[in-house]
Length: 536
Image (cartoon, rainbow, N blue to C red; front, side, top):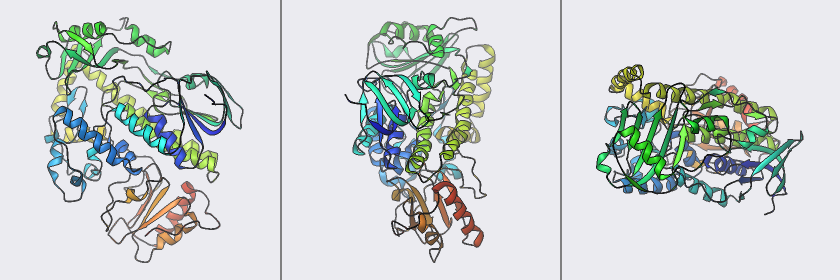
């Protein structure tokens, strides 16, 4: 296998984060390759669903139908109701809302009947509802097909073991030879080799628990209760799919927790979870003598180790996903946080490589993603505090459970978990600025995001005389303009990562001035000669 070639970017890690990043870079015109140490895709149990920003990221690249098909198949397996595609249309059948994915907080499942689905934040993001229940394994397959269509090579069985930043590029030592690359991005997980070789610190909090996730054949499943169950030794969950079990084991402050210690120190890879280990853990926390007869696929082991990289960038080496932050899986935030990293970094690094943005644009990657990463770490730490088996945590769990039994409390938690309240701190007074673009339906029945499957910026112009479209003409190689005659917002500029960079409800001089400044800030200097005409 020849990897001794010059490429703009080498991505290390072929999980969802690495694949999304590689695809975004390819769409920007950069040459990119993905290196993965595993010879075959990881078949272990991981995340079971995605949040709204991740589903919308798939939507923006034309992958929503494929993701919706995955959800339909998953729901058929568990015997649940699958919303029809036309439920996404404004005024469509709202019965789908009754079966929306809500998630859980600290094992307390959030009741969909208590959610205020008319809440403005939730109601603005419904088009991707049919693509939420996409497990990580199926997501990886979907993304692998996506990068293959874009011509991105994924080179498996290649492990990184050295790197040297040469100021104008990076020399990467691998088990298959030396890679010469302009930029190197570590998407290689919480035990990131790239992070270690780059000398980036990984501060945080040590683990207090160990957990397992698996699908197993169970001889006597009637001994287990459905849903989450707590005991003095820990907690477990059985379901929602047949055979799916999660165990959580707590220890006191001086407890050994050898697997947790190994993960936090970043030593050699941990041994596979055995059937006996999983059964012992499940029996311990459930207080039953339940018998497991076989594992279906590879079981996984995890902890509440919570850490965030001291920097997401060291010169020409960058980090994304678990390489930049790790935490417990409670609340299902990790996969989504990593995909958000990739979407944010992809277009910015691509712009720098293309030459229309200064290298300083990459500083906004750390600035924009770090606060969200810190929030996720605290969100998961809070759940651990509620779940521990001591009397104080049990009392706190009762208080939180009481709050989550209210309409306001459940709606708040669902909004947080779903990601609809995420915001980047950007200049501008319009309430859309800094948020992910909502479902903006156009007169022809399409949505704004339907016009951006190829990447780049999207500008919605609803002025009668095309004021904003004319202004953006010098950026036509980077900005696609869509005109429409519906009401407000009058104008919206969406970055390639789905974040609204500018919006207005008027077409006055101030709005025009702000749009031009925003285009220069994010889309670079205008081109001397336009390449395309605006899209109507």
